[in-house]
Length: 260
Image (cartoon, rainbow, N blue to C red):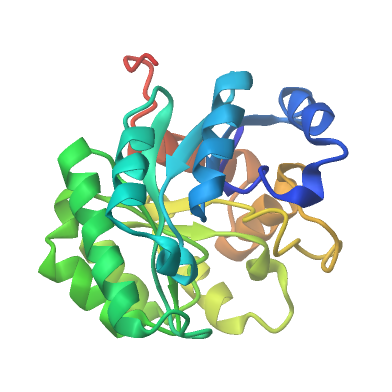
């Protein structure tokens, strides 16, 4: 079944139908969802979702544009949250220079602190990197993050940068953008990269794929992404589903011998 490695069902845009939507996943071919926190508040909401739905797991972390709200007391709470059952990663963490808020040095400090937390708790990381490829790569190398492992979420850089991240042992998260007509660079990456280093994501409610671009996204739109990847790589959609599901279970430690 399809594995959505990155969703935000705690978002208010799901307030009206969240329960119904998540309950419908298995019947629509979606086997597992990792809900990824971004703000301090969303960490608790993410844990709540993972506790209520058997097929939902949690990633706990603070998005680079939200780290300005962190202090030592809140970070200790994040650490405690990350030790709860069904938490499978630290994320989403990283750097975002598109908005540059807060300033880069603050983003870098908390990125490194959260990488240290992932190492301490032996959890992989979910990396957000926008307009910050070199600094992201440099920090991952500085922190020997290849030993931690994880996913470069919503990958948007060149094939050369894709190789750099994959050489560190990271998986690349591919979502709705790959279906956009103007996403030539990402389509090239998908064509050239090994499927064994790819995972699939929605980033819902954001980044809905064609032909529903501009609407609220959900995991139910994943078949559009799967079919685009299959066409680009010249393989079957079931192969894409099976291999990326295996990859996702590997990176998140959800193999059959792991119990939560």
